[in-house]
Length: 125
Image 1 (cartoon, rainbow, N blue to C red):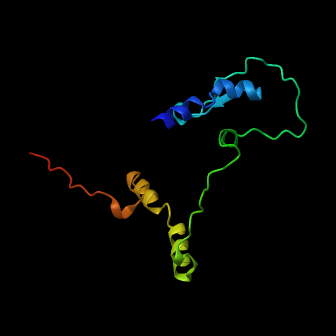
Image 2 (cartoon, rainbow, N blue to C red):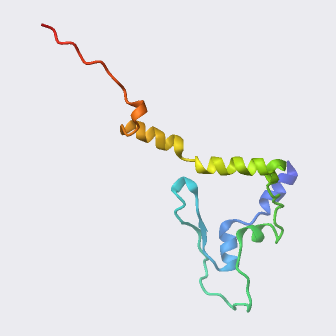
């Protein structure tokens, strides 16, 4: 418990990061359709001295001290190199939208095999 408290107390908040880098921190969230929202603005808008060759600031590298998480590549299936599997992929690609297109043709009455044949109502005399 004490270790967690030390880690949380030593974390840099958004305002401190904005003051240190003299940059505005902007947040994009999918909940609000990725509309940019300003999280923190530097208190002092004037930089003392701009370093030559300054790299572009990246949020992940700033908070992880330059260490990036290991992202493993997605492994391809063993059967991906087989000719029969590639043939199946080509067939699936050619037919990829056919169920939706068939459904639309049925709805609009353009598919003659699926026309609904209703009996004509009998007239009472």
